[in-house]
Image (cartoon, rainbow, N blue to C red; front, side):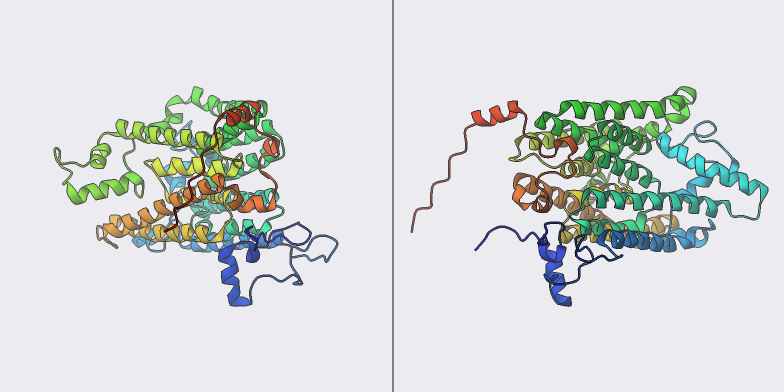
Length: 502
């Protein structure tokens, strides 16, 4: 009997069928008659057999649009800005986009950074101004319009377009596995948090940067990732995996080009504002430096557990309680743990039996940042969403993670409502449990990806592609000669002795 995994690739080797290749989907499919048969009329049938409008890619894009439309409906109760009786919490429809239209002075025509400090990196501030100031101008001429609603809808339309573009990038990177993108399109996290903040600006730019790298355009990839870093910092972390993979594959020229152009783009976008309005520009860094432990983080969970043993009073504090009052130490510890995790990813990259895929390392690095960060906002799940689909397109663990995110979403709004009314909706332990479940499922995904790296025969993407479809110049490249020589000098481990018969 063969020990090879069932790949689910059709006879022409053109596409993957999850009902054959994914154990979870295969099991669920039994409820509707079992996996797709060889003679079924498949929507992704290769060209030349039968042409249909509803291809897999079009279905996935339609599903993404449907999810985003439902998200807009879910946010509808909050769109008028009249948040009476804590409706933004009871309906779970709060969004920073609407709240900050007023908090950042956009409703008064204030220009971000020039007239008001902004708590986000500059490209996000530019987007706020680019959409907010025209809405204010129209509102001045026509006082009957609801400026907040107009501003939210303009942003929702733009962010949704970026989300659909992200789905299109996943489809482009996985032409042989189009149904992988359905993980993204149908994700509960997309439905719940797509327009809570401006995160899809960075996500869309990062996705396009990965696509440019896959197309062997390191300059464009670097520019896009640098622009993404100017919207939210995390896309810059993707340059690290590119660099270490370039080192292993002896493709450092392309890797350095991407890193250099990324940094140039980042500086070019930031410099004009940083020079003209340094104090307002630095608000983002000031908040991140002085902010204490935030809700739902590893540190928050630890502080809760400390509170079960210690009162929190001076002289009777646990380590996490103490860290909350010593922010510089908390910052340094958080950065140090993230740095150690990145070193671990680099070591894993160089010691793995086969060069890891870029998406695998990208997920591990961004996940490590969130795990050790003192801030983990509800919408940050969106950062990991496309990376998870590209890194490990397996439905079982993915849905378990999404279930944990839904639990956290509900518990988080219960915590917000309890804080606003001074009447707890759930016991504090429920929120901590939901936070722990979210943290735990992300850690499990990291462990599963590391296992796929150490045992590449387990990697679902490698069942369909010979190497790394996201790798660009790395795809199909041999390891660097120095690494090959080093591996030859390293003695192979001695086989374990056979067990002695009883």
